[in-house]
Image (cartoon, rainbow, N blue to C red):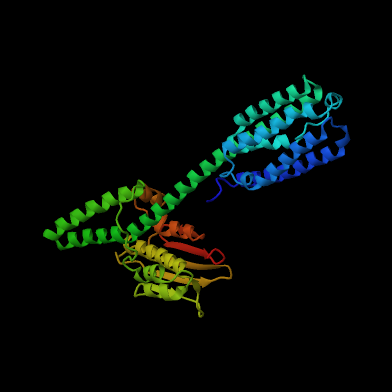
Length: 398
């Protein structure tokens, strides 16, 4: 079983060490003042019990799960009993002079156990009980007694409060991590939906409208489903359907991502060369460009999404599809892929409008993928001069 929080286990370890050390200190005080006790054997008997109890409960105090409230109550009873036994075995002169009680500062460990386990309120209650026992043992509110009780009370309340704040922070952090994990998974699913289902539905809509007849009705229905699915994706509600990884031109990338064993590397050149064609040029280094298979597949899928945007949105003056160039570079600390086209460019504000409409190609399929890889995606577009997308995947994060 894992510890409840990162800050709590060190506190239990420190408390365990404190109890053992203060037990040794109480024994040293007894040995030093042996001849001054009225009943030294009675004091020795109690301290023997205290030593056995401390050593026998080391494992209990070192773990929050084993240190139960019942155990803490017994532990506090041992401390209070030692305080109340002090006037029976020691001289009144030593007590009036501010001499230590039988358990001495070991008592603070019993109170601090309540602080770590139950927070500052229970620690305050335990401190008051110890304070009352000290008042009974000394026969009044002596200055040294009040001073010692206040120190224990303030320390235990402060530690208890810090522990409660730390627990609340840990719960908040755990919720934030769960939300972040759910958001990343939602974005991954949304990317896959964009790269597969939405593109297929858009293609069916276009082909149906071009063919006409019954196919036109099929295309209309596909268009309605595409719009509804985009709304679901953009609103953060992803339908519980399996998301195919292979997009129109991303079969090789999906295979590299899904089929390769964990830890296996893949030559990025082999994945990106599949995109080369009559209107797509690919420039690569002369040597292999290795990346872990999953990272290489995600990078290739992001390139495919960029090229898909070129096919769908970048048209020349005569209506022909824009040309695109892919440049693969193997830098010492990163793999960089640049996708450039000679289309009309992206008008200012168009990406923000597309994202608001649920068209998440750049936001999820490109930037989202690179962010999950620890990299970056920079897009530069000048109206009339084309668009350039630079994808950078650091090697040291893979």
